[in-house]
Structure formats: C-alpha cells, structure tokens
Amino acid sequence: MKYYLTQFRDQVFNGSLSLYKRVFFQFLLLNILIGIVSLLVYTPLILNLFNWGFSDLINLQTSMQEMGETIQKGGDPSEALEGLFGTPNYLYMLPLLLFALFITIWTLNLYYQLNDSEIRNKNRRILNALKNSISPQLFTILGFMVLYYLLCIASFAIFMFTVVMLMQISKILGILIGFVGIFFLMFFILRFSLGFAAIVHGKMSINEAFAYSFTKITFKRAAMLFLMGIVTLVVMGIAGGIGGMIVHLLVSRDHSDPMIYYVVNQIFGTIMGVVVSTFIFTGSSALYFRYSNDEDQENEELSEHLING
Image (cartoon, rainbow, N blue to C red):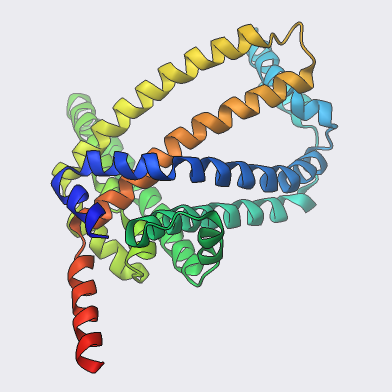
C-alpha cells in the first residue's frame, strides 16, 4: 500500500496513471462481462417495451437520424417520436429501470473494489473483485447516489430560480450572475464527487462520505477537476471522432451487413468507454488515498495487533 500512497501524495496524476496501467486490462474484461450481461437483459426488455424487432434496434441510429431530418423539414415531432417508438408497453419499464439502477451501483462498487484490492494488496484478480462487489456497501452507494442527485437537482433549481428573478430586475445582471454562477454551481457539485470512493475505500457511511468529499475537495481543487474534465472530454471527443471515421471507412453502413456494422460499433464503443471509465475511477481512487489517513489507521491496527499478540 505504501508504494501507491507515496505516488499519490507526491504526484497524484502520475500515481493514478501507474494504477491505470495496472488495472486497465481487468477493467476491459469486466466491462465486456458487464456488457454481455446487460445485453442479455436489456435487449429483450427494450424490444418488448417498444414492440420492436431486433432489426429495429440495430437500425436505431439510422432511424434517429431520419427522425431528426423529418423534424428539421417541419414534421410534427410527436408524430415522428410515435413513429419511432410506437406505443410503449410500460409493463417492462419498471424491471428495466430496476436493472439499470442495480447495474449502476454494482459497477461503481466493482470498479472501486478492484482499485482498492490493487492499491492495498497488489491483487487485481477479477474473481476477487467480483466476490467483494456484492456487499452491504451497495445500499450505502444507492443512498448516497439518491441524495447526491437530489442535491444536484435542488441546487440547479435554486440557481435557475435566482437567475430568473435577477433577470426581471436587470437582464445584464441576470446574465452576468448566471454565467459566473453556473461555474460556481459545477464546482459545488464536484465537491461531493469523492463520496463513492470514500464509501468503498474508507467504508464510510453516507454522512461521512459527504463530509469527507466536501472537506477534501475545496473549490480550488473542484475547479482543477472541472478543467481536467473539459480537457478529457475534448481529447476523447477527438479520438472518438477519428475512431468513428476509421470504423465507417472499414465497415461502411451502406455496403456491410447491418449486424456487422452494429457489432463493430459496439466493440469500438466498449473500448472507448473503458478508456474513459478507467481514467475516472483510477483518478478518483488516487484522490481519495491522497487525502486519506489510511496509512495511519493501518499502522495503528498493526500496533494494536502486536500489543495484543
């Protein structure tokens, strides 16, 4: 553990890159596994929800583009949406949402458990991460997620209400406060972004995770995270655009079997998703351990063990 703590507390970016290199392959395999499980569950639920055939799902992107063109030409948006999605069978909506929620919180726990095991024990075995991912922490993650999203919604609603009120007094003042305030709002929300890592790595309660993240991520640090996020999105956007062009050139939609085009797109999307998600999870794990006192706690537990022994 000291190996990683030294890197995180010296140069957190280099430390997170070191962790990134060690767990990327495991993230890729887990992402593929999650993708297969999700595909097996999501696909029949979505097909039944919208009364689609499998070909409708494969050609969804094309259908969305055609719908957009219809709306641009003056078509009725409601008719275009009804033509694409038909009359949904809402019986399948609840299991779809519940499964999506479970996959989200389970994936968060799984990826952080993998990082935690590697950082503490140099153990990045997938079976070990899968075993640790089914734990009571899932409920803590769920509770934190619900409260975090409610906080985001409430903060945004208050912000919009304030801007609207100021606009009625002075449009210039409203625009100015709105422009500056949106960044302040983003930084405020980012101050709680270490909560998930704190729950898994620090085994904290919901209240402790909120307090830990808000204390450690100052507005200055939140601004740095925001800038890093913008840069990451730009780089990934450029890489995604280039990759998409390559995929299109190698497997043309017009001259290839739709299934082949769909599979290639899914593979490319999975790889891009792993690149981004691994960066996010390893970075947040590195930030948690950079500011944590885990090494002190570990030394205290070792001392108590030696005394008792």
